[in-house]
Image 1 (cartoon, rainbow, N blue to C red):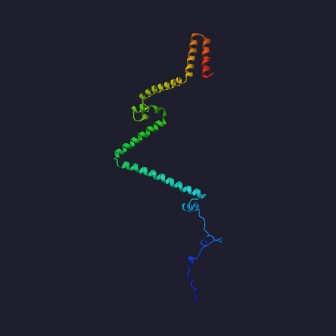
Image 2: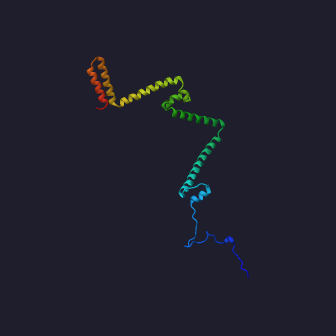
Image 3: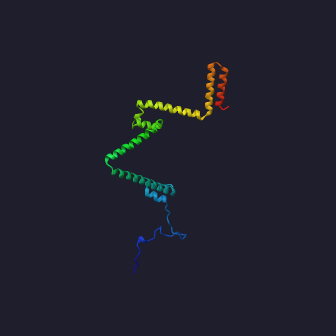
Length: 194
């Protein structure tokens, strides 16, 4: 009688299925970097860098999803409005952005924002007008004067020095050079704290 082969070639054990000499199964170790490298077509130096790349991708996708959702909400809010309302809202946003940009480019005008807004809506145009220039120069001079006074008032030594210098000038006018020298030297010594 002829022996019949009842096993197919496909069911025969391969090298992967054969146990190793020490009795353990021979298993090929495949790391995360290998799997991701093959799937993405990108080489990773180790498992940690491969895992980091996946995490970074998820973070980016999450942020993009949040931004998309916020944009969709804004679009839905605009869809309920008429085109005129949308145009007004866009103009309003342009105005706010334009003002913000103007004051960031020209910080010297920021303290005078209220005054500028009373002259007109476009600050860039307002500062060019002669009426504003005239008012601005006066207000600016006053503010500078007040700031100078506050420095003198906040430091009594400076006030004392100016008093002694005034005394020295008066003494020179009256012809008393000895008193003028004494007052001037005293003012200098006070200025340097001696």
